[in-house]
Every structure is written in C-alpha cells, then in structure tokens.
Length: 126
Image (cartoon, rainbow, N blue to C red):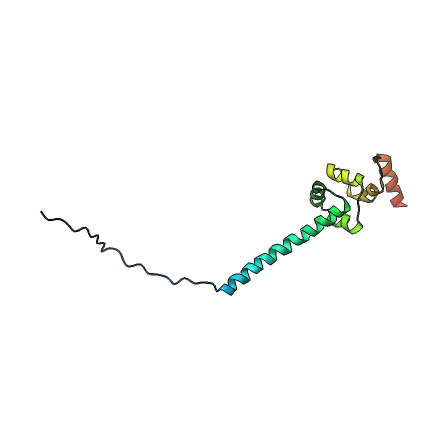
C-alpha cells in the first residue's frame, strides 16, 4: 500500500504580490491632529461664550436653548435684556419679538394685556 504524502500542492495559485504601503510621516499626523483640534475649538468656544454671557444675565439652560431656537441671542446680548417676565415668555414660547423692550420694563407679577400692547404701539408711532 502506498500512502500519499501529506503535502498540499496548489499549482493554480500565483504568488501574492505585496504592495508597498504609504506611511504618513509623524509630523504630518501631528499637524492633522492639531488642525482637527483647532477646528473643534473654533466651533465650540463661541457657543460656550454666548451661553456664559446669557447665564450671567440670569437665563436658565432651558431658556438659553429657547433663545437660540428663536434666534434672539444677538438681540438679547447686544441690549442686555433680562427680566423675569421676559424669561417666562421665552420659556413658554409666547414671546413676540417686537415687544422685547416692553417685556423688560415689566416688574413683579404683572402681565401684559392687549391694552398694553396697543398703547406701546401708539407710543412708538408718535
């Protein structure tokens, strides 16, 4: 009895060709990493600064989110508008942007009525 040798032969295969891999130099990797960090910082730092300015005026986190959603950030920060009544209106989402200066003039628990809005509009016309 003759036994076949336990050697595998595969004549159909061609030898694998090894491609040279391009390697990035260490300096380029560091430069790319610094570029990514710089871009991330340029995006997040202004957001953090505006949030801290709004908080220093007295707004809460939820109110700040609403202010940004309604695009009132620039108006409020430029004029430094804050009052409890304005904060409540922002939080409830019932703010009318043309009456922001009127909201800041309200003190205490008083609320605005339609008469107040009418009088304010008449005073602006005069």
